[in-house]
Structure formats: structure tokens, C-alpha cells
Image (cartoon, rainbow, N blue to C red):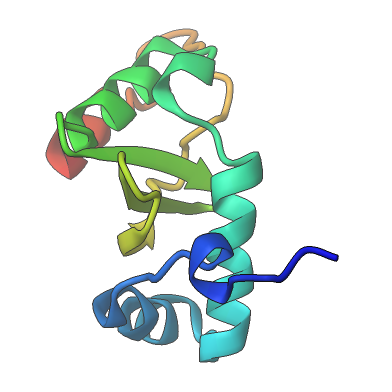
Length: 117
């Protein structure tokens, strides 16, 4: 019978990430843990993005130490080694939407993405 070592399975997230989940999404600590876990498993990384603007947004938020993952309308910044969540913030409102524009009346959201980066 194998013994379960809790420290091997559990990923310690930062207190800052729990505070941001409470502030920005209204989640309790337990629900925030679950949402961060789902973001690790099901989140979209920059390699998975189909739109170049979305890919560019996630690449700008990532660096050599951290990676950005989009999940459920929020961007989670995770540590590359331990996958611990460092912080989270909401994505721009048109992230993941089709970006085709016809005519001059349609607003180009590229400036919104550049300002968010």
C-alpha cells in the first residue's frame, strides 16, 4: 500500500493570487484554488491560440520564468517550474472573439490590446 505525500501532489499558490481572485472575481479561497487548478488543466496558452492578436497578448504577458494562461475570462500568470499561480486579472473583453472588420464604422480593437499589454 503506497502512502500519500501531500506535499508531492499539492501546488502552493501565492497569497497574492488568492487576494486577486477575491478582489477581481469574488471567489473564496477554496473556489479560487479550484479555478486555478482548472486553469492549469484546461487553460489556453499562447501556442493554443488561433488568433494572432490573442497569441501576441499572451506572449507579452509571458517571460522565461512565468507563463500566461487564459481561462474563463481571466488571465492566470503561472510559474513555469512549479505551476504555482502568481496572480490573475481579467482578459480584454474581445479576447477570443472573431476579429473581422468591414468598413470604417467598425472599431478596431488592436489599440485596446496594445494598451492592455
